[in-house]
Image (cartoon, rainbow over all chains, first blue to last red; front, side, top):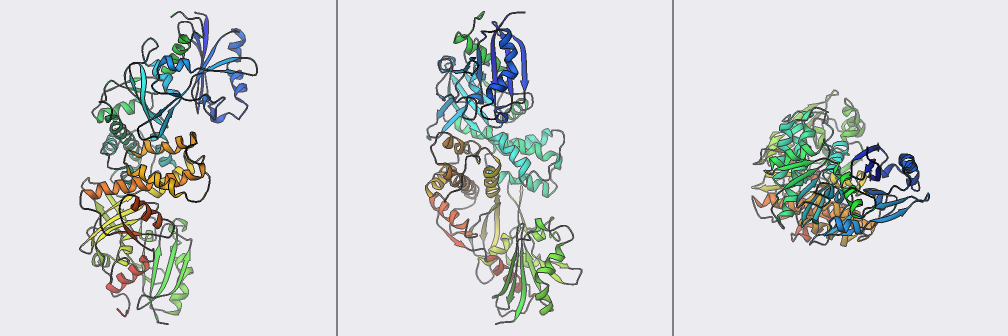
Length: 310
Length: 310
């Protein structure tokens, strides 16, 4: 086994993940806890941190720590200003911000990114920029269009190894709201995924006829018995993902054709997005969420935070 | 005072309204209770009804009763099948369905309407069809485009005195969901309406650039201090109403230019919609919700349920 060279933290809204890495970027040990930043009371970040990885730091005293995700947001441990676009590995590295803990530990926080489209409305990402480093090659981002499914889905364009555009879509949150709290969710029963209902939804969403109206079809399909209640959830999911793809396409259309599409996400959502993109006539490859730890390793290496083999 | 000739019930999802009317359609007495159908346990509709208007029926034995709204839905007292479009006063009258109560009272329920657009997705209204009769002249619907703001906003087109098209938009429900349960609602504070923020929202919504993305601007405006927290709610309301207008316009564009626009609604929402329509370059007149009772009177008169002066 190689010697530990780096601790990488992926500390997001709903989960805490820590990795003990070798100088080659191998994962030697990992910890995953449901201690996302929303579960941490103000002033308690250091306690959670020490509790989780204190034993690693005690065993390997001078180990550097790099972290990304919502831990660097206003609701996190310390707010790291958003860096502007375009940004690649170099810009992210330059934006690393040092957090010195009460115990004297040194954590390097990766900045999120801010982007302002022609309409003057700012948009932000925090975490996906690191995944883009990890989804690339040799620590550099790879050109293409990327989709990050989630509560707030992100689409990003990499050109010349740097993120030049991105946009957020509230798809996942909208699904949860409608499923849990709206009139549409009431008749829904749990059932296996219904691929046909999902596809029908995707096609409805892609038609771009307007979500406020189209969503009501979930109700009328149920009302007139045109779809089993156990399929309504698949249909709703399809409608929203289809609408996201239509919106992203429309916005991207202003800058470029969609090619070299990559979906970065977990086993639950990524395949669903790849499927929906296929229904839209687009081919996508999927990359797992482990892109984060690879990205953190490459940024730490570029910053020479640790002795690496690279 | 004229003699009572009719009891008209507007029994919706969240409220119960009863009117004692003369043969001229004058309101002699009225009752309003927060006993919408969602508050009524199955089997208890007659109790609520008798409790509210039993004294009118006792005083004027043979008084006919006409009712509209969700009371005729599957969740209501008795389900009345949806009538097809096109439909005007005559078709609604022909669709009146008799409900004989355990006590032997006779209630006539007005049917809702069902419409199927070219995309094969059914849509429904229940209550607005009666308001269209009331918003017309002499018991006949007046040609034009109508907007009914609400939890589920409805747009309808009347041609040749009959409803030929309508569509539902989940605008009001979406606003409540996002205000109460989403990340967008968190920073919102109560404040007076902010007309400038509302207008900015309407313009964003009208731009039709996609709601899933555009909604996220509520968050980033707050994040970067670009809008006071007390204005975010006005902005969100504008975004959704603007998007509704854009969607309705797109769908209507397939059939006709929008002219003779009428907003039918209460004092809270109707002026907001008239304002938003103005931002969209459209002129609208507003008609109050009392259109319901006028509509019920005209349908009862057409059906000759009561002795009227008309």
